[in-house]
Image (tube, rainbow, N blue to C red; front, side, top):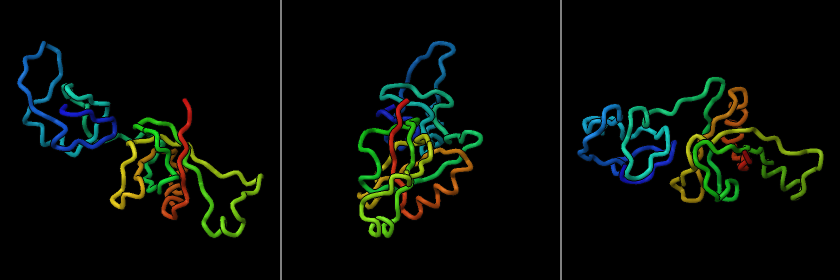
Length: 164
């Protein structure tokens, strides 16, 4: 590996180099002829700079049975600034529509706690092309995915990082 690549990140051509080595029996490596196949795949594990790629360390990210993957676009202020690598446990919180916030001021009725959905980060957030928002893929229970996708399409979600 030419640079550190976190689990979930997509491999680019500059991330991987070719070296000549002799390896002990039983050590898994990939031949240089497979380099083109790796580019565009996702790291299934953390790949530190200087490490050798093993079979199965790059490919499509599997979806856990009973779950679904949802993409979120989050403006600044709705996603923590601390690192959120793949595997981070989060809650995706439903936020009020702008018209609801304006009508009731900035106070929310005490009995109306916001709904949230537990999720796991599939890939660390990446800055969107607009440079003002973040793109984040999360895995949630399959029955929660349609509601969460609908909320995300209407810009009505924020993210909270949960403890272990």
